[in-house]
Amino acid sequence: MYKVTKKKVHGLLHPEIVGDKHWDKIINVFIITLIILNVIAVMIETIPSFHDDYNEQQFFRYFDLISVIIFTLEYVLRVWSSNQEEKYKHSIWGRLKYMLSPGALIDLMAILPFYLHAIIGFDFKSTADVTPSQVLSAVPANSLHEISTHDHKCFQKKNK
Picture 1: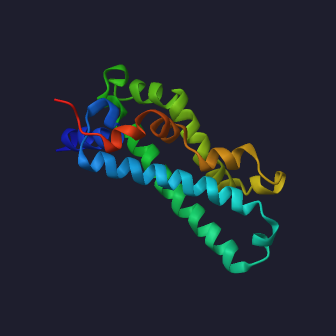
Picture 2: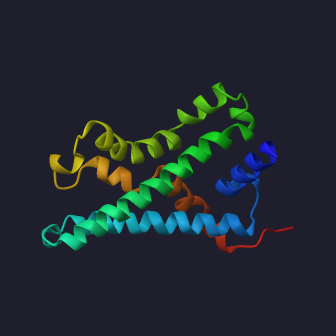
Picture 3: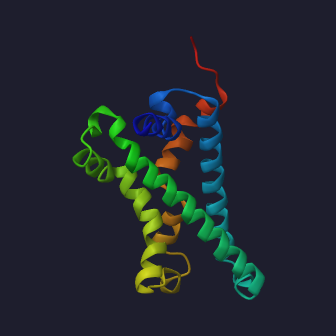
């Protein structure tokens, strides 16, 4: 049951490796949409008039929180299921190797500012209008990779 679940999770998060199934498409379109919405939210947050209204501030806080939870869940599931691939086969070293891959590092950098702020209280937003951390937190690399190379697969049928 454990291995079957891990294989299914890996397939859902990596349709380019495992195949092209209905739920793969839905998850990838959802993640791509969430990334685009986060980019838009980061741009809108730079408009000074949005800093004045308490309700708008709350909306962005909750949207950021929900997005970080989803991206964290995606990251954790990717790390957990990464040893389904041959190059990450070892249960510990394989996952560490995956975590040190460029896409996984950028995904980690995307969610890390949120947790650093929660743990040590450093506010990345107060350092500049829009910091690289904010931009990175809005755009996880693996998802950008999905947008650039696999987005078209979401709408194509697998050739037999």
